[in-house]
Image (tube, rainbow, N blue to C red):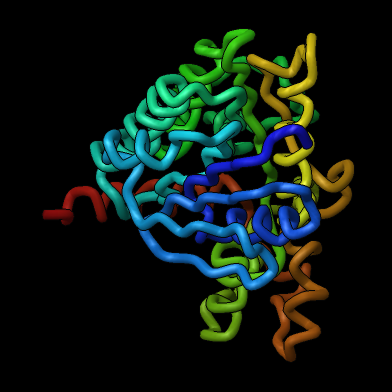
Length: 288
C-alpha cells in the first residue's frame, strides 16, 4: 500500500477494530482513529486515537491533515430508536463533513463503509448485483440515510480524490454487537417460540475480517494509477447465499448450549410483517 498515514472514522467500532487488526500487517507509519470513544491497539505502535464526532467538521479537518487516505466507517446504526433527524445528521451530514475535510486536507482516496441496506426497499432482493437501482421507498430510515450518503459520496468522486463504497452483508465475528449477539439474547431469554418464514429465504453473511481486508484492498486499488474503482460500489460477502438466516445461526446457538425452535414451528412471513408493522405504528403513536 502506498498510503503511509490513514484515518479511520468509527475505528473503535465492530468493523473499525477489525480494520485495525488487518493494519497490523500493513507497512503504514500512522493510523489515526476518529471516534466518539477512545481505542487502543497494542499491535499498532503508530496508532493515534482522536475522540471526536463526525458532526464536528473542524475536528474532522484537524484529524485529516497530513493523511493520505480515509476510511469512513462511522455511522449511526439504528432501526427505530434514533429520530430520523439524528440519523440524517450523523449518516448524511457526517459523511459530508468527512468528504469536505478529506478534500480540503488533500487526501488521495476515500473508502466509504456503506451497507447492503442501501438497496433494501419494500420488495425482496434476489440475486442483487451492484447495478441494482436504489429503491424509491426504503425499508427504514437507516437504509435511506445510508443510501443518500453513498450516492452523494460516489457522485463526488474525482481523479484527484477517488471514492468507492463497500456494502457488507450481515457481518459476524469477534465483538459482533448485532446479528449473533441479538440472536443469543433473544434465545437465552426464551423469547423465540417460533421461526419466521418457511425457511426458503436465503441470506448472505460475511466475516468481519474479510470486510476489513476488502476495505484495505479497495484503498490500495484507489491509489493505483488509472484505477477505475472511483465512483463504484461493491457488495462484500463470503459466498453465494446458501442458508436461511436461522440455519446459519443454528450451529452457533447450539454450540453455546441453547437451541432454536424446531423448523416445524414457524409463522408465515406476511403474518410477522403485519404484526411488526402494527407494533411499530403503536410505538410511534406512543413515542414522546
